[in-house]
Image (cartoon, rainbow, N blue to C red):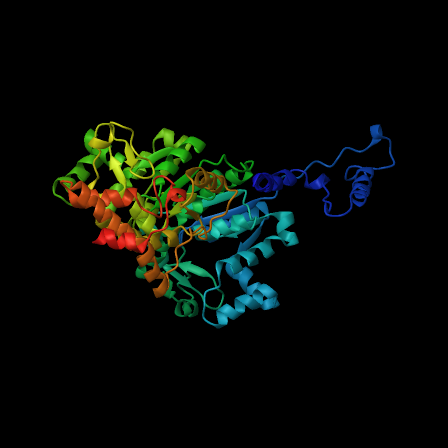
Length: 576
């Protein structure tokens, strides 16, 4: 486990080191014998610095060739019609980088008949979308070619989604600069609606900004208006871009600069050039942004305490934030109070606005955040995305339903101190038990409804955050769970949905009957006998407590060694 962390740290930093020493570096296969490796290193050192004379005395050796600047690895992003094409041309002209379009790279692989191209062609012939991992492998193959390695590269409009950005990082594709062009929606629509293309030359005109020559009647007659350049189609494309751009930027915030795409194209190009001429910043310090999810009683509270202690994150509870805004009478709080006073639910958009406002505070910006139990529904997931709140990690605590019910029905609240106890797993001290109360939503019936609601909405969360989510077995000691959560947030464990606790298989009918006869019936009979002897004022409550405290599957005290086997005659006597 420790070695995995050290290797991950090494891989995160080694490429940026090598980039600075390419002119004087040489790699060796460390899996060979040590003498063979040593001989190769000796030969490399004996050869002297590049451009030098190994036979000349050290004092007369030629100075090493100055190191070339690191190659630029640029990603450019922006909505449709934001001006990426124009800026790509100007960047290539100034810096000589290789312009890469995923569409062009895909078609080239298909045309060359490579293994990747054959797989892509199979998808295309079947009318299916080419999978992300295949496209990224094609991009990786293109970036590894000699021209990209020597000149640097400009990746145009890719990645388009957070999942693609995550997968690119996992495959080791790291950028040095991220250029983001920003243009208001109405201008994007205007730019698109006026576009016309010449099918013969491929040239793009605009009826307002770059009109075709009106005296060329043949050209005017053959110009076409693409079906995806209408206002309706453009609105959908802009919407799709906005849905995904936030999660993409989240992966490149430390190397991203935004540019006003409404300026003159040369003014934009000049500001982009100044950015690209700056030294790449490399990796920023990792400030975790974490969502923790799980059913009621899954252990989120305990793990939140551990996460805050381990990482120093700011713990954000939507309930606490909502009450604070209402109490302080803020504009958001007054809106929420109106809904609460009328008995209505506070809308997802308003809750999200409150969360977003909290995340702008300096402590959250500096320390990172832990969002507790939110989002819970598809609507809340969507609202968070639209507010550009994107987590790095999503922790999902998984606990079987029957254990959740047991945990909840045994919970008791101390109304004096606010402390939570459990009559089995965390019994209260003497003198406290008499004043404990059970919350109305901790009954078996209420709990079953809450669990059902949780399962109805869980799919939306796991689907949207599938590349950032790890399902963690919550049926273990809190310390073991905490260690896994910590390793996942640190990045030494991958996102995976496989950490599911074991569920009990359905018993066969004969096994169920045997269990009823040997365990359930004697247990119920003993409980009823105790009820008859005690004659309490609240018989049902007494019986419920008795059954929890004497549960043969999980007794408070392990006294099985002192118990004799159940005698059916004794059972019959008690029944009588």
